Image (cartoon, rainbow, N blue to C red; front, side, top):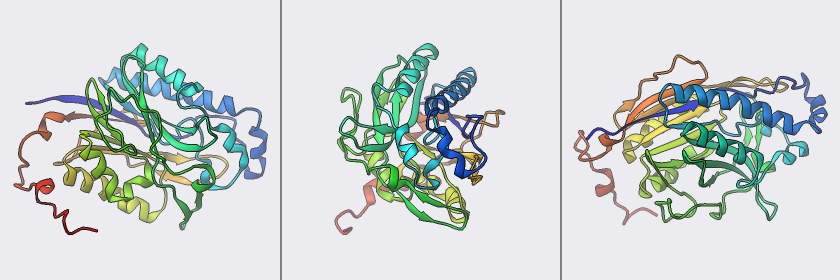
Length: 310
């Protein structure tokens, strides 16, 4: 039985117009971090409104969407950008927006939890503006490629399985990988680096996910090459839809180029992008197509040799 839901993702970059031109001038932002956040909230509110006008019932925003991608260096300034996932300004803003527009929103933020730990976290809000819960990024990268360095371990703790989740709508038994029952389908989240680890989407699939959104800030030759394959492989292997959303363009003052290339993919291949907006990807996902036997004749969950894997 057909069960079609339109889902949207953003493909954009930092919208704060007064970013300094040089890295050495970044400390000038110390008193205006709230302005940086507000500029990005307003920019993304406009994108969400446009997505809803195209029929989107779920809209996923990019990784760390209220800010530039600051993990290219270690700078204590940005640790002050973290906010409470439940009561912080982004959660409140997105709750009001979700309720006004009647749309499910996935909004990745820089979280500061009451005990002082910081996480790379996605908020999941339903169309009534209710916070269904959070997903905390499980794997935290640090290293250098041919373009730049990334220092996420300076800013983020690894997920501890203790994020806020409304258990009335959680379909997963794994505290690290909640799956949220929304009015339009069962939804999971994996953030950026998580996509490289095969257990992530498997765990979300075991929790019943039909759609997995993967917001990312990705750059570099190998990342771009693998970007074309990882979501497609996981969607086929685990029989679900994946939305892979990457930041696009360069941001001052670092000028690292994020390659974009966002797309939706299901078990039978890529889904057509119905959007002509350069900052939005919109696709019609038929969740009913996930029911029943796979046309290939494969049954990977049934035939997996879990008894021999370490």
